[in-house]
Image 1 (cartoon, rainbow, N blue to C red):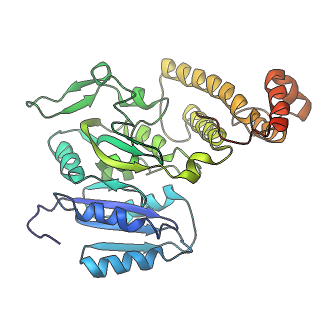
Image 2 (image 1 turned 60 degrees about the vertical axis):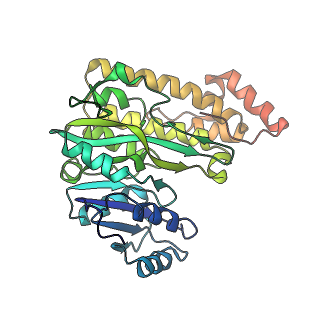
Image 3 (image 1 turned 180 degrees about the vertical axis):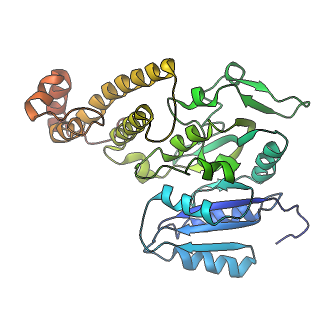
Length: 337
C-alpha cells in the first residue's frame, strides 16, 4: 500500500453475499484510490461460498486495512449496511457493493465535497453502467436530469459541484443515485435509523429520502463508480414486475409515515399519482408472464384490499386477456421498466 497518499476520515462499507468470484475486483478499486480510506469494512451476509476466505487472502496479500464482520444469519443488504454503520468509527461512509467498482478519484472527490460544504450530509456523483452488451457513461443521474433545473452551482470557482435545491423532491419518485457513487455523514445516517429493512429493493432510495431531511445533497459532476449489470439480473422473468412491487411498497411506506419521511400535500398528491401509474405498469408487466403470475401479482399489490380471483379478472379485462394470450405465446421473458 502506498503510504504517501492522503488518508481520509471515511470507511468504505462493502456488504457481500456469495461474491467470491467478484469481490477482489471491488477491493482492488479501493486500493487504487488517489486518497485512501481509513479502512474497508466488509460485512459478509452469511455467505455459503468462500467470499470471506477470498477477502482474508487479499488482505494478507496486499496489507490493506480491511475489517471483516461475519453475520450468522442472512438479513439482506440493508441490514448488512446498517451493521457496518454501527461498527464504523469514521466521520464519513462510502458504500461499495462487492460486484461494483470505485473509480480512482471517488473518495477524494466525495469526501472533499462534503468537507468543503457546511451543512451537506450527502455527496454523490454519477456512474458508468456496464452491461453484457455495452458501457454507458453518466448512466444513473446525468442521463435523467437537467442539473440546472434542480440544482445551483456551489460557489467557489469551477468546482463542478452542485447543491440540489430540494433533494426530497428530486428523489421522491425514484432514486437516481448509484449506491456506490455516494458518501455521507455517518452520524446523520444513524440519526435517521439507517436504511429501512424489510424491503426487497429500494432501501437505498428510502435511505436517501430520510437523509434529505437532514441537510444538503451535493452532486459532483463526474462518474465516480462503475456499476456492473449481470446477465442473470437482466433476464430473470418477473424482474420488472418485482421492481414495481418494491416501488409500490416504498410509496405506501412514505405515505403512511412509518419511515419518518414527511411529505407536504403537493408531494403526497405526487406519490399518489406515482402509485396509480405504477399499478398500471405492473398490470402490463405481470400480464406478459401468464395468467397465474398476473393473478398472483394482482393479489399482492401493497396498499390495496385483497380481491378474490373473479374481481382480479374483472378489474382489468384487457390485461387478463393479455395474460391468457401470453401463455400460448410462451412469453416468459422480462419487460423493461
